[in-house]
Structures are given as C-alpha cells and as structure tokens.
Amino acid sequence: MNKIQKIITFALTILFAAGIANAFGYFRSSDMYDFVGMPGFGMFVGFGFVAMAIGILLFLFWLWMLVDCLKRDFRKDYEKIVWVLVMIFLHILGAVIYYFVVKVEEKKAGKDRKKS
View 1: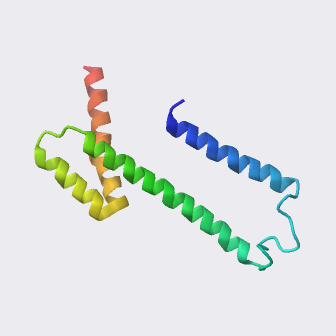
View 2: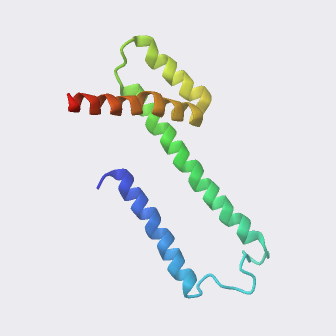
C-alpha cells in the first residue's frame, strides 16, 4: 500500500469513526449545530474544517507537482524554468495544467512503449 492509499484509508477511517459516534448519540444536543454555547455556529465550524482539509490536500497536490517538476529531466533546459514559474504564479491551476500536460502524457507514452 503506497503513501497516498494510507492517507486515504486514514481519512476514511476517521470519517467512519465519526459516523459511528454520531449514530450512538455522541454529537447530539438540543441544537444539532450548537458549538461552545453558540447555537448554529457549529455548522460553520464544520464547513471550515472541510474547507481547511480541502485546502491542505490541494496544497499537497501542488507541492507534489512542484517537486516532480524540479526532479524531472526535460528535453530543453528552459522548460523546467517555465513550468516552475507557471506553478508558482498559477498555484493550483498551474499544478493541474502541469499534471495533465506532463504527467498524463508520460503515462500515455509509457503505455505506448509497453505495447510495441
């Protein structure tokens, strides 16, 4: 099991444990969104945790693509510089573009080599 699968398994285990705790009434109160005595505030805190988790995952994806770009040997020297600048200035969008232009094309080329 690789590192990403372990992270996904851990996250799903936490969600499953929270669901079980909720099923047995651990999170129940008079107001289902009560948080520290402020009715309705817990709903927004929950959304904040979800947004924070998504933000962390997107940052890790960006970091993964940046490290991949820095380690990769491109055909021309300036390609690496261009890709690093694209990822720095476009952040997540640049990482997604890099993934589909470079990483997916590499996978396709690898499959083509195996077929021939």
